[in-house]
Image 1 (spheres, one colour):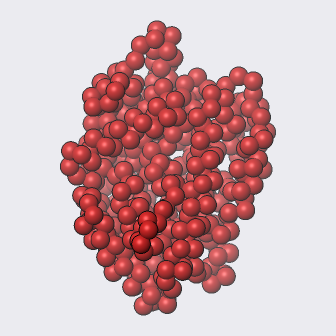
Image 2: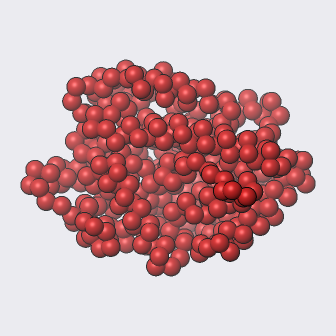
Image 3: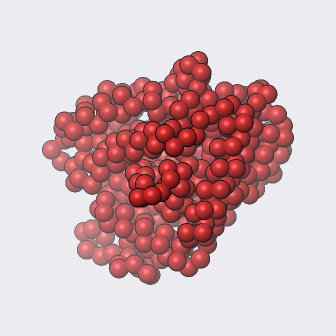
Amino acid sequence: MSGRGAGTDLGGNMKDLKHLIYFEDLLQDANNALVQQARKEGKLALGYNCSHIPELLLDVEGCFGVRLRAPRCTSTDMATYYMTNRSCPYSKSILERAFEGGYNFLDALVGQECCTTMNRMESYFDYCKLIPNDKFFVECIDMPINRSEWHEGYYERQIRAKIIEPLEKAYGVDFSDEKLLKAIEVHNEVASIITEIGNMRKLENPPLTGYEFHVIQLVTLVCPKYLIMDKLRETLAELKTRKPDPKPWYRARIMVAGAEVDDPEFTKMLEMCGGFVVADRYCFGSMPGRDPVEIAPGETPLHAIARYYMWSNQCPRAMGAENLRSRKQYIYDKAKEFNAEGIIVESMKFCEYWGYERAQDAMWLGQGFGVPEPIPVCQIEKDYVSAASGQLRTRFQAFIESLEIKSIQGTKGGAD
């Protein structure tokens, strides 16, 4: 499968990235080749489902984090029996794959208590004894819904009680300051590479497609980083010398914001309609999450990690008018920074948090409320897999055509 649309002219005539097919293959299953290699080397596989979980803490020496996906999951019959029809399709797909044995390689699952449906799904891993490992356990962090210096301390205590102490007790994992500093160093290198690659999307005629970036970003979430780092470095070096076509291939520059998008085919479909995905503010995206962790003078590594994940997170679970406004401003600022002409705000079916947030984003940003000027917005509700691809394609095409018309007429704003 080509990163330029499987034989289409997506991306023009740019030379294929050397490692793209390899990266795509790694995304076909949660228990991919690199996960299997790390397990054979004695590393602990730690699953997680949410950006509230401190990813870099799961990558401490002797461990690696795997953000759970359920590629090609088309039926959730077993999960629906446990979770009802009106449950988040992402959570049901993960649970269905667990019943199928797709996560039998896990040594632990770290969840969170901010989403009831996801929390219920995670509890079934333990209740139904889905993982054939006597030491396997599930812990769920209580992530604060507000943010302050006090909440930093509370979140740090949660990390210690729900991640560090259970892993120390069950597997003897070393979370000393020395090991945490090393994990921060690895995280910061990954963040630097992804940020530099992502910033290429700001160019009028960039040397990569949004689909290719989506694949690369996903690989950093689902593979042991020490096994993928060399290919990330090579890909960055390759992109620096990659030559795009003389004229840009796309018709409009699009930012995507919202809930889980862990299927690169979603991005490919959008780009085959002529929209170049220049920014990815969604769960599994690089905004936020691929910023460096900085340690303040006199600060412990653990507190720096807690502070970073609490303040950088843009999840709609964070309550209060200040948090709500700051999320809209964040999307607006990123859209302007990456020269997006329009924004697609998506939510998963039955997601209460993003269902409300999607409607708010569309009105606030589309009408210019609380931001310097309006930006055209298209809001969509989708399933976990792109089963209704025809409907999505029609919406994408219509939105991109409207952006072209607005560009010609020189008008701005409006929410779809």
